[in-house]
Amino acid sequence: MSLRDRDLISIQEARELVARAAAAQKKFSAFSQEQVDAVVEACAKAAADNAEALARTAVQETGYGNVPDKIIKNTLAAVEVPRAIRAMRTVGVLREDREKGIVEVASPVGVVAAVTPVTNPIVTPMCNAMFAIKTGNAVVFAPHPAGTVVACVPVRAEHEDALKSGRASMERFIADLVRDYESGKVDRREFCKAVVLAATVYAVGDAAKAQAPRGFKMIGINHISYTCPDYAKVRDWYVSVLGMENTPGKDNGQRANLMFGPEPGKGGSFVVARTARPAANPRPPARSLVDHVCYSIPNWDDDRVNAVLRATGRSFTSRSGNVNVLDPFNYPVQLANSEEENAWK
Image (cartoon, rainbow, N blue to C red; front, top):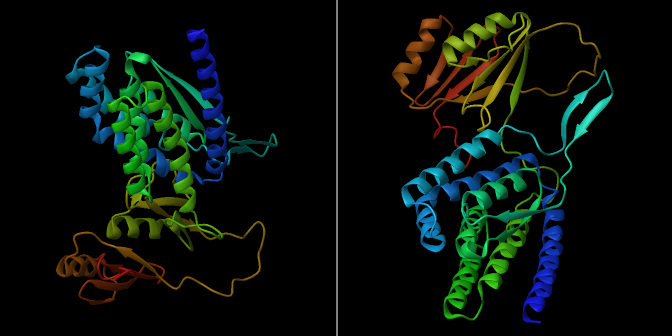
């Protein structure tokens, strides 16, 4: 009867975990692509920061493998897996085929059940967590009995690093839970169940609080659409003077994407320079306009900036840390160091 009873208890625990994970996933399904990606990146950072400690714990508890190899394995997974999925769109409309009338829309499955082998107690839950979160799902882990504690550590680490509020209360919860486990008040099954449940419910609940109460929360400018008589003149000037990069494969003789800032997928922006042509669907004239664009320049040096602009032959006005110049079609461009145009100073 004892074994059978434990089986029944295990089934009930699984049902409760899935029910709570489903409730958490329902909240998580309202997250934007940017919010989902932020949680994945936080998980990856936590895994990378704890690669060595996780490796030592895995070898100590399971008796399998060796620490140096597991450090390499943990680090590679924490870096390469998020890099491989970083640019993937997994929220909302994924792609559209207007000719065939087909729209592909992402739809999470809800709750993912993940089994963790004793030979891979770190990388498996680490990657499964990132895969589940990236696709808008919740995940419930079932670790091998010989690797229960170490399998829960990456979940705990990823969760704590993803939290934006309530960090102190979560740390106290984990600390108390570890003390109860070490003292024998809770067994491995109860310990793991509590940690996984906290990772699923707390992380989604706290992240939901960070969402803007109304409308959207902008995180940056994706691109600026710039229409002019000759896009090539603008392209050449912005590339040679402002150091923008002409995106390979996007210059079609009528328009070009000029990238600047961080690399694609990490917050960079671009200017879409295009030659003016009659609009296919004319719209009412705008009653407002963006009268200039200001670009931040790193490692600002007044003499260097002024010398570069003088070499272009275009007139400009300047003060320390700030320059205003007209581009080839007399659109006002402002250049400034990051401190000069700091909106929060």
